[in-house]
Image (tube, rainbow over all chains, first blue to last red):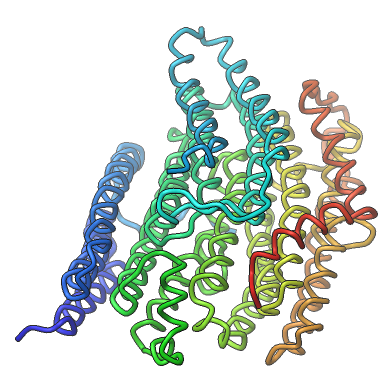
Length: 100
Length: 484
Protein backbone atom coordinates (compact mmCIF):
# COMPACT_ATOMS: atom_id res chain seq x y z
CA UNK A 1 0.00 0.00 0.00
CA UNK A 2 1.40 3.34 -1.00
CA UNK A 3 1.33 5.79 1.88
CA UNK A 4 1.66 9.58 2.12
CA UNK A 5 5.30 9.11 3.16
CA UNK A 6 6.14 7.53 -0.19
CA UNK A 7 4.78 10.50 -2.09
CA UNK A 8 6.66 12.77 0.25
CA UNK A 9 9.93 10.96 -0.42
CA UNK A 10 9.45 11.22 -4.19
CA UNK A 11 8.62 14.91 -3.96
CA UNK A 12 11.61 15.57 -1.68
CA UNK A 13 13.82 13.78 -4.22
CA UNK A 14 12.38 15.88 -7.06
CA UNK A 15 12.97 19.02 -5.01
CA UNK A 16 16.59 18.06 -4.34
CA UNK A 17 17.22 17.22 -8.01
CA UNK A 18 15.81 20.62 -8.95
CA UNK A 19 17.88 22.41 -6.32
CA UNK A 20 21.02 20.60 -7.44
CA UNK A 21 20.27 21.64 -11.02
CA UNK A 22 19.87 25.29 -10.02
CA UNK A 23 23.11 25.24 -8.06
CA UNK A 24 25.28 23.41 -10.61
CA UNK A 25 23.99 24.18 -14.10
CA UNK A 26 25.22 27.18 -16.06
CA UNK A 27 22.64 27.54 -18.81
CA UNK A 28 19.74 29.84 -17.93
CA UNK A 29 17.18 27.67 -19.70
CA UNK A 30 18.29 24.54 -17.87
CA UNK A 31 18.26 26.53 -14.62
CA UNK A 32 14.71 27.50 -15.37
CA UNK A 33 13.69 23.90 -16.01
CA UNK A 34 15.20 22.92 -12.67
CA UNK A 35 13.17 25.63 -10.98
CA UNK A 36 10.01 24.22 -12.56
CA UNK A 37 10.95 20.81 -11.21
CA UNK A 38 11.16 22.29 -7.71
CA UNK A 39 7.72 23.85 -8.05
CA UNK A 40 6.28 20.57 -9.29
CA UNK A 41 7.82 18.74 -6.34
CA UNK A 42 5.74 21.01 -4.12
CA UNK A 43 2.69 20.35 -6.29
CA UNK A 44 3.09 16.60 -5.90
CA UNK A 45 3.40 16.90 -2.12
CA UNK A 46 0.34 19.15 -1.97
CA UNK A 47 -1.83 16.87 -4.08
CA UNK A 48 -0.76 13.80 -2.12
CA UNK A 49 -1.40 15.54 1.21
CA UNK A 50 -4.72 16.74 -0.05
CA UNK A 51 -5.71 13.17 -1.04
CA UNK A 52 -4.58 11.54 2.21
CA UNK A 53 -5.95 14.23 4.53
CA UNK A 54 -9.20 14.42 2.57
CA UNK A 55 -8.88 18.20 2.29
CA UNK A 56 -9.31 19.85 -1.10
CA UNK A 57 -7.53 23.08 -0.13
CA UNK A 58 -4.23 21.57 -1.17
CA UNK A 59 -5.45 20.95 -4.70
CA UNK A 60 -6.72 24.52 -4.97
CA UNK A 61 -3.28 25.67 -3.90
CA UNK A 62 -1.81 23.57 -6.74
CA UNK A 63 -3.96 25.45 -9.24
CA UNK A 64 -2.62 28.72 -7.88
CA UNK A 65 0.95 27.45 -8.13
CA UNK A 66 0.48 26.28 -11.72
CA UNK A 67 -1.01 29.64 -12.72
CA UNK A 68 1.69 31.65 -11.01
CA UNK A 69 4.39 29.43 -12.46
CA UNK A 70 2.99 30.09 -15.94
CA UNK A 71 3.15 33.84 -15.33
CA UNK A 72 6.67 33.50 -13.99
CA UNK A 73 7.79 31.48 -17.00
CA UNK A 74 6.35 33.96 -19.47
CA UNK A 75 8.18 36.85 -17.84
CA UNK A 76 11.31 34.78 -17.35
CA UNK A 77 11.53 33.55 -20.93
CA UNK A 78 10.94 37.08 -22.21
CA UNK A 79 13.83 38.27 -20.06
CA UNK A 80 16.09 35.47 -21.21
CA UNK A 81 15.26 36.26 -24.85
CA UNK A 82 16.00 39.95 -24.26
CA UNK A 83 19.30 39.00 -22.66
CA UNK A 84 20.19 36.70 -25.54
CA UNK A 85 19.45 39.42 -28.11
CA UNK A 86 21.64 41.84 -26.24
CA UNK A 87 24.54 39.59 -25.29
CA UNK A 88 24.25 36.45 -27.47
CA UNK A 89 24.57 34.25 -24.42
CA UNK A 90 22.41 32.33 -21.98
CA UNK A 91 25.27 31.35 -19.72
CA UNK A 92 25.06 32.60 -16.14
CA UNK A 93 28.82 33.00 -15.96
CA UNK A 94 28.60 35.77 -18.54
CA UNK A 95 26.39 37.79 -16.19
CA UNK A 96 29.31 39.52 -14.60
CA UNK A 97 28.96 43.19 -15.37
CA UNK A 98 27.66 44.17 -11.94
CA UNK A 99 30.40 43.99 -9.39
CA UNK A 100 32.42 46.14 -7.04
CA UNK B 1 -18.22 38.09 1.68
CA UNK B 2 -16.66 41.30 2.84
CA UNK B 3 -15.10 42.65 -0.33
CA UNK B 4 -15.50 46.26 0.79
CA UNK B 5 -12.69 45.69 3.32
CA UNK B 6 -10.17 45.70 0.51
CA UNK B 7 -11.36 48.86 -1.24
CA UNK B 8 -7.91 50.46 -0.94
CA UNK B 9 -6.24 47.63 -2.86
CA UNK B 10 -9.05 47.54 -5.40
CA UNK B 11 -8.69 51.28 -6.02
CA UNK B 12 -4.91 50.98 -6.46
CA UNK B 13 -5.30 48.12 -8.94
CA UNK B 14 -8.04 50.03 -10.79
CA UNK B 15 -5.74 53.06 -10.98
CA UNK B 16 -3.14 50.81 -12.60
CA UNK B 17 -5.67 49.61 -15.17
CA UNK B 18 -6.87 53.19 -15.62
CA UNK B 19 -3.35 54.28 -16.53
CA UNK B 20 -3.10 51.51 -19.12
CA UNK B 21 -6.37 52.66 -20.69
CA UNK B 22 -5.58 56.37 -20.33
CA UNK B 23 -2.31 55.73 -22.12
CA UNK B 24 -4.24 55.14 -25.35
CA UNK B 25 -5.49 58.73 -25.42
CA UNK B 26 -2.39 60.42 -24.08
CA UNK B 27 0.18 61.79 -26.50
CA UNK B 28 3.80 61.03 -25.69
CA UNK B 29 4.71 64.43 -24.31
CA UNK B 30 1.87 64.35 -21.76
CA UNK B 31 2.62 60.87 -20.39
CA UNK B 32 4.19 62.39 -17.29
CA UNK B 33 0.80 63.73 -16.31
CA UNK B 34 -0.44 60.16 -15.86
CA UNK B 35 2.34 59.64 -13.33
CA UNK B 36 1.56 62.88 -11.50
CA UNK B 37 -2.09 61.87 -11.46
CA UNK B 38 -1.26 58.45 -10.03
CA UNK B 39 0.98 59.99 -7.36
CA UNK B 40 -1.75 62.43 -6.35
CA UNK B 41 -4.26 59.58 -6.26
CA UNK B 42 -1.99 57.58 -3.96
CA UNK B 43 -1.63 60.63 -1.73
CA UNK B 44 -5.41 60.90 -1.47
CA UNK B 45 -5.71 57.18 -0.71
CA UNK B 46 -3.06 57.63 1.99
CA UNK B 47 -5.22 60.29 3.64
CA UNK B 48 -8.38 58.18 3.22
CA UNK B 49 -6.62 55.23 4.88
CA UNK B 50 -6.65 57.19 8.16
CA UNK B 51 -10.45 57.12 8.04
CA UNK B 52 -10.52 53.30 8.08
CA UNK B 53 -11.69 52.19 11.49
CA UNK B 54 -10.17 49.00 12.84
CA UNK B 55 -11.89 48.63 16.17
CA UNK B 56 -12.12 44.86 15.94
CA UNK B 57 -10.45 42.49 13.53
CA UNK B 58 -12.38 41.86 10.32
CA UNK B 59 -12.01 38.99 7.87
CA UNK B 60 -12.87 38.54 4.22
CA UNK B 61 -12.78 35.62 1.76
CA UNK B 62 -13.33 32.96 4.38
CA UNK B 63 -10.60 34.17 6.72
CA UNK B 64 -7.96 34.48 4.01
CA UNK B 65 -7.84 38.25 4.24
CA UNK B 66 -7.56 40.02 7.56
CA UNK B 67 -7.96 43.69 8.34
CA UNK B 68 -6.43 44.56 11.70
CA UNK B 69 -4.34 47.43 12.99
CA UNK B 70 -1.12 45.78 11.74
CA UNK B 71 -2.51 45.49 8.21
CA UNK B 72 -3.67 49.09 8.07
CA UNK B 73 -0.35 50.33 9.49
CA UNK B 74 1.55 48.62 6.71
CA UNK B 75 -0.94 49.73 4.05
CA UNK B 76 -0.22 53.34 5.05
CA UNK B 77 3.54 52.77 4.80
CA UNK B 78 3.09 51.20 1.36
CA UNK B 79 0.80 53.98 0.09
CA UNK B 80 3.24 56.64 1.25
CA UNK B 81 6.18 54.82 -0.32
CA UNK B 82 4.19 54.19 -3.49
CA UNK B 83 3.32 57.86 -3.88
CA UNK B 84 6.93 58.98 -3.46
CA UNK B 85 8.21 56.26 -5.78
CA UNK B 86 5.65 57.32 -8.38
CA UNK B 87 7.01 60.88 -8.32
CA UNK B 88 10.51 59.44 -8.61
CA UNK B 89 9.32 57.47 -11.62
CA UNK B 90 8.02 60.66 -13.21
CA UNK B 91 11.44 62.26 -12.70
CA UNK B 92 12.98 59.15 -14.19
CA UNK B 93 10.70 59.16 -17.26
CA UNK B 94 13.18 60.72 -19.73
CA UNK B 95 15.38 57.62 -19.43
CA UNK B 96 12.60 55.20 -20.33
CA UNK B 97 12.53 54.82 -24.08
CA UNK B 98 9.28 52.93 -24.50
CA UNK B 99 6.38 51.98 -22.26
CA UNK B 100 6.28 54.90 -19.82
CA UNK B 101 2.68 54.30 -18.76
CA UNK B 102 3.31 50.60 -18.32
CA UNK B 103 6.11 51.51 -15.92
CA UNK B 104 3.67 53.52 -13.80
CA UNK B 105 1.02 50.80 -14.04
CA UNK B 106 3.43 48.07 -12.96
CA UNK B 107 4.47 50.14 -9.95
CA UNK B 108 0.80 50.37 -9.00
CA UNK B 109 0.27 46.63 -9.41
CA UNK B 110 3.28 45.90 -7.22
CA UNK B 111 1.87 48.35 -4.69
CA UNK B 112 -1.50 46.58 -4.72
CA UNK B 113 0.32 43.30 -4.13
CA UNK B 114 2.17 44.73 -1.15
CA UNK B 115 -1.04 46.09 0.34
CA UNK B 116 -2.76 42.72 0.02
CA UNK B 117 0.34 41.06 1.52
CA UNK B 118 -0.15 43.20 4.63
CA UNK B 119 -3.52 41.48 5.03
CA UNK B 120 -2.61 37.92 4.02
CA UNK B 121 -3.86 35.43 6.60
CA UNK B 122 -3.62 32.24 4.58
CA UNK B 123 -0.68 30.57 2.91
CA UNK B 124 -2.35 30.53 -0.50
CA UNK B 125 -2.97 34.30 -0.39
CA UNK B 126 0.55 34.82 0.98
CA UNK B 127 2.02 32.93 -1.97
CA UNK B 128 -0.08 34.69 -4.62
CA UNK B 129 0.58 38.22 -3.31
CA UNK B 130 4.27 37.53 -2.86
CA UNK B 131 4.44 36.36 -6.48
CA UNK B 132 2.44 39.38 -7.64
CA UNK B 133 5.10 41.58 -6.04
CA UNK B 134 8.08 39.53 -7.20
CA UNK B 135 7.02 38.94 -10.82
CA UNK B 136 6.23 42.63 -11.22
CA UNK B 137 9.67 43.43 -9.89
CA UNK B 138 11.33 41.08 -12.42
CA UNK B 139 9.89 43.29 -15.15
CA UNK B 140 10.59 46.57 -13.36
CA UNK B 141 14.19 45.70 -12.50
CA UNK B 142 14.99 44.96 -16.15
CA UNK B 143 12.92 47.82 -17.51
CA UNK B 144 15.84 49.57 -19.23
CA UNK B 145 16.40 46.55 -21.39
CA UNK B 146 18.78 48.29 -23.75
CA UNK B 147 21.22 48.59 -20.84
CA UNK B 148 23.02 45.38 -19.98
CA UNK B 149 23.25 46.30 -16.29
CA UNK B 150 19.47 46.54 -15.95
CA UNK B 151 18.90 43.30 -17.88
CA UNK B 152 21.48 41.52 -15.81
CA UNK B 153 19.86 42.75 -12.60
CA UNK B 154 16.50 41.51 -13.85
CA UNK B 155 17.79 38.06 -14.81
CA UNK B 156 19.61 37.64 -11.50
CA UNK B 157 16.55 38.67 -9.56
CA UNK B 158 14.47 36.32 -11.70
CA UNK B 159 16.56 33.21 -11.04
CA UNK B 160 17.07 33.82 -7.34
CA UNK B 161 13.51 35.05 -6.84
CA UNK B 162 12.09 31.97 -8.54
CA UNK B 163 14.37 29.80 -6.41
CA UNK B 164 13.08 31.44 -3.25
CA UNK B 165 9.45 31.01 -4.33
CA UNK B 166 10.10 27.32 -5.02
CA UNK B 167 11.57 26.93 -1.53
CA UNK B 168 8.64 28.81 -0.03
CA UNK B 169 6.10 26.69 -1.89
CA UNK B 170 7.76 23.46 -0.82
CA UNK B 171 7.69 24.71 2.75
CA UNK B 172 3.99 25.44 2.43
CA UNK B 173 3.44 21.93 1.01
CA UNK B 174 5.24 20.36 3.97
CA UNK B 175 3.23 22.45 6.42
CA UNK B 176 0.04 21.44 4.65
CA UNK B 177 1.17 17.83 4.76
CA UNK B 178 1.65 17.94 8.53
CA UNK B 179 -1.26 20.14 9.60
CA UNK B 180 -3.74 19.70 6.74
CA UNK B 181 -4.50 23.42 6.76
CA UNK B 182 -3.43 26.55 4.90
CA UNK B 183 -5.15 29.22 6.95
CA UNK B 184 -2.97 30.76 9.66
CA UNK B 185 -5.83 30.44 12.14
CA UNK B 186 -6.33 26.71 11.56
CA UNK B 187 -2.59 26.02 11.53
CA UNK B 188 -2.14 27.76 14.89
CA UNK B 189 -5.00 25.73 16.35
CA UNK B 190 -3.74 22.42 14.95
CA UNK B 191 -0.18 23.04 16.08
CA UNK B 192 -1.28 24.29 19.48
CA UNK B 193 -3.43 21.22 20.15
CA UNK B 194 -2.35 17.75 21.27
CA UNK B 195 0.11 19.11 23.81
CA UNK B 196 2.53 20.32 21.16
CA UNK B 197 3.35 16.91 19.71
CA UNK B 198 2.69 18.19 16.18
CA UNK B 199 4.82 21.27 16.80
CA UNK B 200 7.85 19.01 17.29
CA UNK B 201 7.01 16.99 14.17
CA UNK B 202 10.09 17.16 11.89
CA UNK B 203 7.87 17.65 8.84
CA UNK B 204 6.23 20.74 10.32
CA UNK B 205 9.57 22.13 11.48
CA UNK B 206 11.15 21.57 8.06
CA UNK B 207 8.18 23.32 6.49
CA UNK B 208 8.52 26.27 8.85
CA UNK B 209 12.25 26.57 8.09
CA UNK B 210 11.66 26.48 4.33
CA UNK B 211 8.87 29.08 4.52
CA UNK B 212 11.09 31.33 6.60
CA UNK B 213 13.93 30.87 4.09
CA UNK B 214 11.65 31.88 1.22
CA UNK B 215 10.59 35.03 3.06
CA UNK B 216 14.10 35.82 4.29
CA UNK B 217 15.09 36.15 0.65
CA UNK B 218 12.72 39.09 0.22
CA UNK B 219 14.20 40.76 3.29
CA UNK B 220 17.78 40.00 2.14
CA UNK B 221 18.71 38.22 5.35
CA UNK B 222 21.99 36.26 5.44
CA UNK B 223 22.47 33.68 3.80
CA UNK B 224 19.89 34.84 1.22
CA UNK B 225 21.33 38.29 0.70
CA UNK B 226 23.58 37.78 -2.34
CA UNK B 227 21.08 39.12 -4.86
CA UNK B 228 20.61 42.51 -3.21
CA UNK B 229 23.73 44.44 -4.25
CA UNK B 230 23.57 43.39 -7.92
CA UNK B 231 19.86 44.04 -8.29
CA UNK B 232 20.01 47.34 -6.40
CA UNK B 233 22.82 48.54 -8.63
CA UNK B 234 21.38 47.45 -11.96
CA UNK B 235 17.70 48.29 -11.51
CA UNK B 236 16.35 51.76 -12.36
CA UNK B 237 16.56 54.06 -9.29
CA UNK B 238 12.81 54.31 -8.57
CA UNK B 239 12.57 50.52 -8.72
CA UNK B 240 15.53 50.16 -6.37
CA UNK B 241 13.83 52.53 -3.95
CA UNK B 242 10.62 50.52 -4.12
CA UNK B 243 12.56 47.29 -3.61
CA UNK B 244 14.37 48.76 -0.63
CA UNK B 245 11.25 50.09 1.07
CA UNK B 246 8.19 48.29 -0.27
CA UNK B 247 9.48 44.82 -0.94
CA UNK B 248 11.36 44.77 2.36
CA UNK B 249 8.37 45.98 4.37
CA UNK B 250 6.12 43.45 2.62
CA UNK B 251 8.58 40.69 3.46
CA UNK B 252 8.67 41.96 7.04
CA UNK B 253 4.93 41.93 7.58
CA UNK B 254 4.72 38.40 6.16
CA UNK B 255 7.60 37.20 8.34
CA UNK B 256 5.95 38.73 11.40
CA UNK B 257 2.61 37.13 10.63
CA UNK B 258 4.06 33.72 9.78
CA UNK B 259 6.41 33.57 12.76
CA UNK B 260 4.13 35.01 15.41
CA UNK B 261 0.59 34.35 14.17
CA UNK B 262 0.75 31.17 12.09
CA UNK B 263 3.54 29.12 13.63
CA UNK B 264 4.19 30.53 17.10
CA UNK B 265 4.34 27.08 18.72
CA UNK B 266 7.30 26.24 16.45
CA UNK B 267 9.09 29.54 16.07
CA UNK B 268 9.06 30.82 19.63
CA UNK B 269 11.97 28.43 20.31
CA UNK B 270 13.98 29.89 17.47
CA UNK B 271 15.49 32.94 19.12
CA UNK B 272 19.06 31.57 19.19
CA UNK B 273 18.84 30.58 15.51
CA UNK B 274 17.35 33.94 14.51
CA UNK B 275 19.91 35.83 16.62
CA UNK B 276 22.73 34.05 14.77
CA UNK B 277 21.22 35.04 11.41
CA UNK B 278 20.82 38.62 12.63
CA UNK B 279 24.46 38.81 13.74
CA UNK B 280 25.74 37.52 10.40
CA UNK B 281 23.39 39.80 8.44
CA UNK B 282 24.47 42.92 10.34
CA UNK B 283 28.19 42.15 10.09
CA UNK B 284 28.07 41.06 6.44
CA UNK B 285 26.03 44.05 5.28
CA UNK B 286 28.14 46.62 7.07
CA UNK B 287 31.57 45.16 6.34
CA UNK B 288 30.87 44.47 2.66
CA UNK B 289 29.54 48.00 2.18
CA UNK B 290 32.83 49.60 3.20
CA UNK B 291 34.81 49.22 -0.06
CA UNK B 292 31.89 50.09 -2.38
CA UNK B 293 32.29 52.87 -4.92
CA UNK B 294 28.81 52.92 -6.43
CA UNK B 295 26.17 54.63 -4.29
CA UNK B 296 23.31 52.33 -5.34
CA UNK B 297 25.40 49.23 -4.67
CA UNK B 298 26.48 50.64 -1.33
CA UNK B 299 22.81 51.21 -0.45
CA UNK B 300 22.18 47.58 -1.43
CA UNK B 301 24.67 46.39 1.17
CA UNK B 302 23.32 48.93 3.61
CA UNK B 303 19.82 47.50 3.10
CA UNK B 304 21.18 44.07 4.08
CA UNK B 305 22.55 45.60 7.26
CA UNK B 306 19.20 47.29 7.93
CA UNK B 307 17.46 43.92 7.53
CA UNK B 308 19.82 42.63 10.19
CA UNK B 309 18.84 45.41 12.57
CA UNK B 310 15.16 44.67 11.88
CA UNK B 311 15.82 41.02 12.76
CA UNK B 312 16.78 42.18 16.25
CA UNK B 313 13.16 43.11 16.85
CA UNK B 314 12.11 39.60 15.81
CA UNK B 315 14.72 37.99 18.06
CA UNK B 316 13.34 39.94 21.00
CA UNK B 317 9.99 38.09 20.51
CA UNK B 318 8.10 40.71 22.44
CA UNK B 319 5.56 43.35 21.56
CA UNK B 320 8.23 45.96 22.27
CA UNK B 321 10.37 44.29 19.59
CA UNK B 322 7.51 44.20 17.09
CA UNK B 323 6.64 47.85 17.63
CA UNK B 324 10.33 48.77 17.34
CA UNK B 325 10.39 47.01 13.96
CA UNK B 326 7.37 48.98 12.78
CA UNK B 327 8.81 52.30 13.94
CA UNK B 328 12.16 51.47 12.39
CA UNK B 329 10.46 50.64 9.07
CA UNK B 330 8.73 54.03 9.00
CA UNK B 331 11.98 55.85 9.72
CA UNK B 332 13.80 53.69 7.20
CA UNK B 333 11.15 54.39 4.56
CA UNK B 334 11.39 58.16 5.05
CA UNK B 335 15.20 58.11 4.99
CA UNK B 336 15.68 55.74 2.07
CA UNK B 337 13.02 57.42 -0.04
CA UNK B 338 14.72 60.79 0.51
CA UNK B 339 18.07 59.27 -0.40
CA UNK B 340 16.75 57.66 -3.57
CA UNK B 341 14.81 60.73 -4.67
CA UNK B 342 18.05 62.69 -4.36
CA UNK B 343 19.90 59.94 -6.16
CA UNK B 344 17.38 59.87 -9.02
CA UNK B 345 17.66 63.64 -9.47
CA UNK B 346 21.47 63.51 -9.25
CA UNK B 347 21.74 60.68 -11.76
CA UNK B 348 19.51 62.63 -14.14
CA UNK B 349 21.82 65.63 -13.89
CA UNK B 350 25.21 63.94 -13.52
CA UNK B 351 24.62 60.69 -15.37
CA UNK B 352 26.41 58.44 -12.91
CA UNK B 353 25.70 56.88 -9.53
CA UNK B 354 29.35 56.61 -8.48
CA UNK B 355 29.99 58.14 -5.07
CA UNK B 356 32.83 60.28 -6.35
CA UNK B 357 30.60 61.87 -8.98
CA UNK B 358 28.69 63.52 -6.12
CA UNK B 359 31.67 65.81 -5.47
CA UNK B 360 30.78 69.44 -5.70
CA UNK B 361 27.07 68.69 -5.18
CA UNK B 362 27.00 71.27 -2.38
CA UNK B 363 27.68 74.03 -4.89
CA UNK B 364 25.43 72.65 -7.59
CA UNK B 365 22.37 72.14 -5.44
CA UNK B 366 22.43 72.79 -1.69
CA UNK B 367 18.97 71.22 -1.33
CA UNK B 368 19.98 67.90 -2.89
CA UNK B 369 23.26 67.89 -1.00
CA UNK B 370 21.67 68.52 2.39
CA UNK B 371 18.96 65.90 1.81
CA UNK B 372 21.56 63.30 0.91
CA UNK B 373 23.75 64.23 3.89
CA UNK B 374 20.84 64.03 6.31
CA UNK B 375 19.71 60.71 4.85
CA UNK B 376 23.19 59.21 5.21
CA UNK B 377 23.55 60.52 8.77
CA UNK B 378 20.12 59.14 9.65
CA UNK B 379 20.92 55.74 8.12
CA UNK B 380 24.13 55.66 10.13
CA UNK B 381 22.05 56.20 13.26
CA UNK B 382 23.53 59.43 14.53
CA UNK B 383 21.28 61.37 16.94
CA UNK B 384 19.06 63.34 16.76
CA UNK B 385 17.76 61.97 13.43
CA UNK B 386 15.08 59.30 13.06
CA UNK B 387 17.52 56.46 12.31
CA UNK B 388 19.08 56.81 15.75
CA UNK B 389 15.82 56.47 17.61
CA UNK B 390 14.77 53.40 15.60
CA UNK B 391 18.04 51.59 16.32
CA UNK B 392 17.78 52.61 19.96
CA UNK B 393 14.29 51.09 20.23
CA UNK B 394 15.44 47.85 18.57
CA UNK B 395 18.45 47.43 20.84
CA UNK B 396 16.37 48.34 23.86
CA UNK B 397 13.77 45.68 23.01
CA UNK B 398 16.50 43.03 22.75
CA UNK B 399 18.07 44.06 26.05
CA UNK B 400 14.69 44.07 27.78
CA UNK B 401 13.57 40.62 26.73
CA UNK B 402 17.12 39.20 26.95
CA UNK B 403 16.79 36.12 24.69
CA UNK B 404 19.61 33.58 24.42
CA UNK B 405 22.79 35.17 23.10
CA UNK B 406 21.49 38.72 23.30
CA UNK B 407 24.87 40.03 24.43
CA UNK B 408 26.56 38.95 21.19
CA UNK B 409 23.70 40.41 19.18
CA UNK B 410 23.95 43.82 20.83
CA UNK B 411 27.74 43.85 20.44
CA UNK B 412 27.38 42.92 16.75
CA UNK B 413 24.83 45.69 16.26
CA UNK B 414 27.14 48.26 17.83
CA UNK B 415 30.12 47.06 15.77
CA UNK B 416 27.88 47.31 12.72
CA UNK B 417 26.83 50.86 13.53
CA UNK B 418 30.43 51.93 14.06
CA UNK B 419 31.60 50.29 10.83
CA UNK B 420 28.72 51.87 8.94
CA UNK B 421 29.85 55.35 9.96
CA UNK B 422 32.82 54.90 7.64
CA UNK B 423 30.89 54.35 4.43
CA UNK B 424 27.97 56.65 5.17
CA UNK B 425 30.28 59.49 6.08
CA UNK B 426 32.31 58.69 2.95
CA UNK B 427 29.31 59.92 0.94
CA UNK B 428 29.08 63.03 3.10
CA UNK B 429 32.80 63.66 2.57
CA UNK B 430 32.40 63.31 -1.20
CA UNK B 431 29.56 65.83 -1.19
CA UNK B 432 31.13 68.47 1.05
CA UNK B 433 34.90 68.27 0.84
CA UNK B 434 35.90 66.51 -2.37
CA UNK B 435 36.73 68.94 -5.10
CA UNK B 436 35.14 68.31 -8.45
CA UNK B 437 37.70 68.17 -11.30
CA UNK B 438 35.82 70.71 -13.42
CA UNK B 439 35.13 73.62 -11.17
CA UNK B 440 32.47 75.45 -13.18
CA UNK B 441 29.42 73.18 -13.07
CA UNK B 442 25.95 74.51 -13.64
CA UNK B 443 23.27 74.42 -10.97
CA UNK B 444 20.89 71.44 -10.97
CA UNK B 445 17.29 72.35 -11.75
CA UNK B 446 14.65 70.56 -9.64
CA UNK B 447 10.95 70.44 -10.48
CA UNK B 448 8.49 71.87 -7.94
CA UNK B 449 6.89 68.57 -6.77
CA UNK B 450 10.32 67.07 -6.16
CA UNK B 451 11.45 70.16 -4.28
CA UNK B 452 8.39 69.93 -2.05
CA UNK B 453 9.08 66.25 -1.49
CA UNK B 454 12.74 66.88 -0.62
CA UNK B 455 11.76 69.52 1.93
CA UNK B 456 9.15 67.13 3.35
CA UNK B 457 11.79 64.39 3.58
CA UNK B 458 14.23 66.67 5.44
CA UNK B 459 11.44 67.80 7.76
CA UNK B 460 10.30 64.24 8.52
CA UNK B 461 13.84 62.96 9.18
CA UNK B 462 14.40 65.69 11.76
CA UNK B 463 10.85 65.80 13.13
CA UNK B 464 10.65 62.05 13.77
CA UNK B 465 14.01 62.27 15.51
CA UNK B 466 12.55 64.58 18.15
CA UNK B 467 8.82 63.82 18.29
CA UNK B 468 8.25 60.11 17.82
CA UNK B 469 5.20 59.75 20.03
CA UNK B 470 2.53 59.56 17.35
CA UNK B 471 4.34 57.02 15.21
CA UNK B 472 5.44 54.99 18.24
CA UNK B 473 1.85 54.89 19.47
CA UNK B 474 0.62 53.77 16.06
CA UNK B 475 3.34 51.11 15.98
CA UNK B 476 2.47 49.87 19.46
CA UNK B 477 -1.18 49.75 18.52
CA UNK B 478 -0.33 47.76 15.37
CA UNK B 479 1.99 45.42 17.27
CA UNK B 480 -0.77 44.66 19.78
CA UNK B 481 -2.18 42.06 17.35
CA UNK B 482 0.57 39.65 18.40
CA UNK B 483 0.13 37.61 21.57
CA UNK B 484 3.44 36.92 23.22
